[in-house]
Image 1 (cartoon, rainbow, N blue to C red):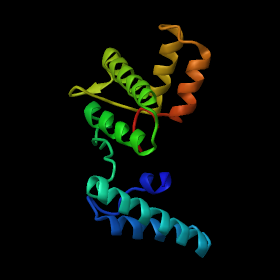
Image 2 (image 1 turned 135 degrees about the vertical axis):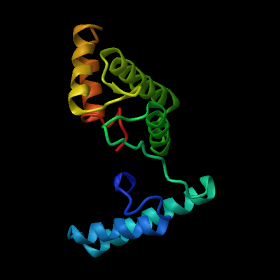
Image 3 (image 1 turned 180 degrees about the vertical axis):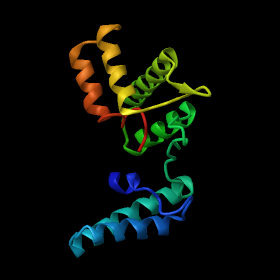
Image 4 (image 1 turned 120 degrees about the horizontal axis):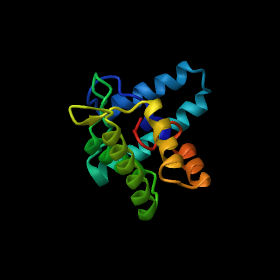
Length: 160
């Protein structure tokens, strides 16, 4: 399911069946066995059916990156919240992750890495933020490692 949710849509706002078809075609092109493609089809179909009953087949939103590389913090926070909820994380974990996202965007505003008020997120800004945690805020090394491992260079901060 995580892979399906990370797969970019073939067109803007496609219906769920087009998303499923594009995803399964991608698996087949990768050389996956037929049974693996069928298993993925069943899993995604089940999930889509569950989602259609619970939220009218609305897939978790993704934050849109502007042409200048900036990302709206509100959209990012909403997308991250939905992503965390789809993965059934605890409420406390959700709050902690969203707090790190807020801190990251506050840091970007402080250092001036913005365009028209929207933060610019790059691999370098993420690495600068982690360095800032160590040098200025004296965050423990174990916490920095947890952040670095969790984000996998910005996954936590910016939804795929």
